Image 1 (cartoon, helix red, strand yellow):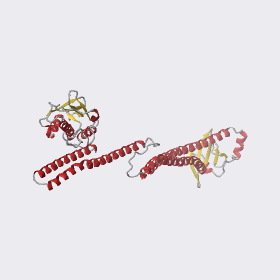
Image 2 (cartoon, one colour; image 1 turned 60 degrees about the horizontal axis):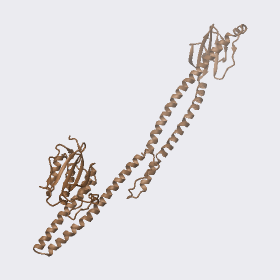
Image 3 (cartoon, helix red, strand yellow; image 1 turned 90 degrees about the horizontal axis):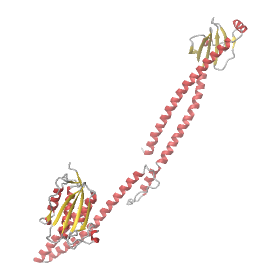
Image 4 (cartoon, helix red, strand yellow; image 1 turned 45 degrees about the vertical axis):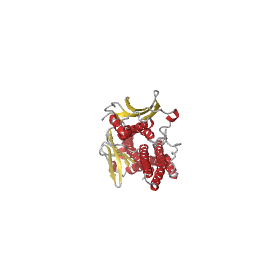
Length: 437
């Protein structure tokens, strides 16, 4: 069932039910008031007749002893007056003795043939006055009043349902336009959906949709960039490997061995570049990294230095903040710190030591890697985290610092570089910390 049909059905039934209950309530009160009013009129008629009879002159009373007084009848209303001795002294209908006979005081119902009468008996000064209404006359009058009262309810209910349908149709029109707009878009179109003229209730939906489109677009851009980067960076080592293998096939002795050595080095470089590309794609692609191990600072530093084979004996670090935990998966923390250590070793003087320190603040910790290299100029500082950018001619994929920047950005950290005034180069990696469980 569509949203429009569901709203119309729910609101329509609710409106009809409420109007129906109100109408039934009103008609019930109307009927009670109508009956009470007619009964009061019937009683008032009897009292009026009693008052008039008591004011009659004595000669009229003497004449009534001889003959019954005839009161002009009114359609649907009958009246009869009895003397204290039970004699009829005045009446409107001569053929309604059974209906107008004295009986129980107050209001009662009496039947004569197929006609039901509402009877009121009143006694005053020995006189008994009986008045009666025909129920079919009452019913006809009540039906007329009900029709007059019900017709406006029916018209109002019908108008309300029509207004409800029009309001729902117009209110949901923006959703229909949005559906038509999305249906007519090109499958590859990822531009944000326009929010001009959109009701504020639908705007969060469109904003969420636009956010999704932006994320999809970013994902496609990352995939395209990964494909382009892989095609660009892998072409050179593959060509070199192919060339060295061809030389090895044609040469013999030391020349063939040297060519195979170069080919093997190319394979190692190619594997390293692939690993770096895949790591960067996983980090930027928002894949989950959770090995279930806590990221304790001391262990991260120890494992990062251990993973860097070139750092053995060259990297110096003091006792590092025990029982402090990073708000980052241990795998990524180790990767980021190892890449900074490798970068310092590759670009510093050969054999010169590097220093690794950690400084904690209230909510984060900053790792600083200091090498003894010559540093870089200000223009180069801004390019260090670009993909495949190399500050020197030394072999490398040019992805190490880009991976560090991507990891830091994903987990709310930061990476920055500066030239040391006393000589050397600083790389600062800031990572948020968490309280231990």
